[in-house]
Amino acid sequence: EEQKDFAEQRAIELKKAKDELEDYSLKLRMSSQYKTDFLANMSHELRTPLNSILILSQMLMENNSDMDHEEVAEYAKVVNTSGADLLRLIDDILDLSKIEAGKIEILTDEVNVTEIPQTMRNMFNPVAAKKNLQFEVVTDSNIPPVLSTDGQRLQQILKNLLSNAFKFTEQGGVTLRIELAPPEKAKKLINKQTREPVLALSVTDTGIGIPQEKQKIIFDAFQQVDGTTNRQYGGTGLGLSICREFTRLLGGVIEVQSEPEKGSTFTLYIPSRLEAEEVVPLDVRLG
Ligand code: ADP
Image 1 (cartoon, protein in one colour):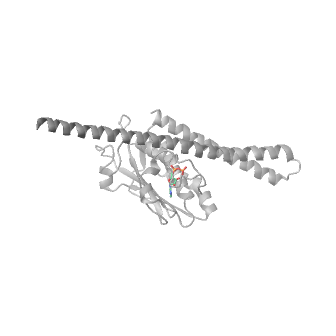
Image 2 (tube, rainbow, N blue to C red):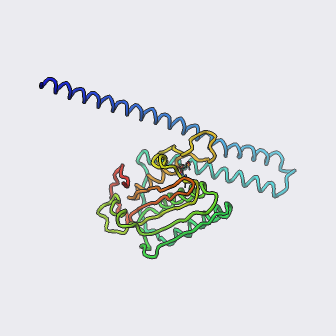
Image 3 (spheres, rainbow, N blue to C red):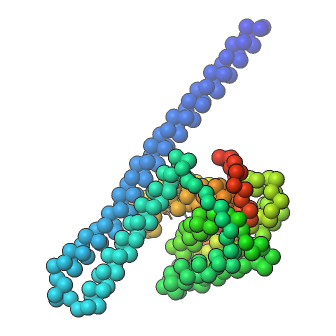
């Protein structure tokens, strides 16, 4: 009897080890697939602006005597925006590799909340106007006027979320809301002892939305809802993983609610005062 028990026990252990191994090898294979997809996307994303820069600058070099002033200015502008696109892409890659190496520094500072709406309006009003979309910023009056957090990183997160919102929306508009987190969300925040108010910053759009089964993976690096090479929207799939990591570094969490063809809301919950020596655990998610 005892021997039988022992054999059964061993069989269970073996099966568990085998499952773990399979799980691990699946993960490995998937991560190498990510990298292949990533490199393919990345090459495409690098080549597009670089091609414009090379072709247009060559035209400017060779034919500038036959061009009128406006034409020259127009080409120069495309060269300039293509360069800016490239720089953004490279900054994203650098940020992500710094995050992965644990080398991102968080600089806590006094951040004036009332400045956030204006900064975002300045940045996104032109995009909104160009696509004929509404852009609304709603700030709750009971939020603390001054935050103690990394303003640069916070801005980067909001910028990423807003540019996605505008990118994936063709009609209607985008709303940025800055308010207090409801108590049940605030309680779940990483820093459980926090007595400080918790903020909820959300970006809502009326765009294409995200299918339920994709809502978890879009925060992983290199993941896009449409991962095919002939996909309609550009991008590298890095923005949201940077957002998630920065949010974690700010002591917060990020979540998404979305319905295909209706729109999406990305919400950031962050403490209004980030303790400098706070240790942020790696894998905390809102349930
Ligand atoms: P990128 O936008 O460069 O592809 P992100 O990490 O920012 O990378 O986003 C990953 C994917 O999540 C996008 O490719 C898109 O499929 C989906 N996504 C992100 N934001 C939105 C949004 N507001 N509406 C619809 N889909 C979105």
